[in-house]
Length: 183
Image 1 (tube, rainbow, N blue to C red):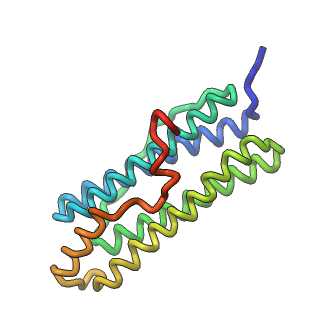
Image 2 (image 1 turned 180 degrees about the vertical axis):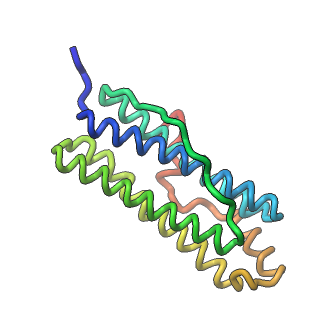
């Protein structure tokens, strides 16, 4: 008996998003490595923590597909791309990635709505809310850097920003609670 409660289209789209979240994790790892190499240990740590959050999102998609009787498909991931050229570039890229991810989540919501898959539509509302938090997180990074002076910031301002981000709690409380064991 077929117990899969997902359409082939939605199952594939959810699997694709699982892989996208995994790629986002790798992107944040690569930006964290770049920041560490530049001497920004606090910013690096912050980006590494965010990379783990993105991985937890991938696990959340995987678990949902499995719970609905589907089988998620893992695909090869592309390279995270070029390194940022500056902190401004890094934070702008973070924002761009989050906006692109929001667009992908909205596409999933549209598919679930079109197919009248209310369980999936409901599941995806967590991610809609999460993307508001993610975009806000990215905009706050850009604002903090602007306040510090942008790419022309003094060493003292950058040191303070680095230390602030090192100890700053992640804004996405729901995402903080999601782990591999508890997606």
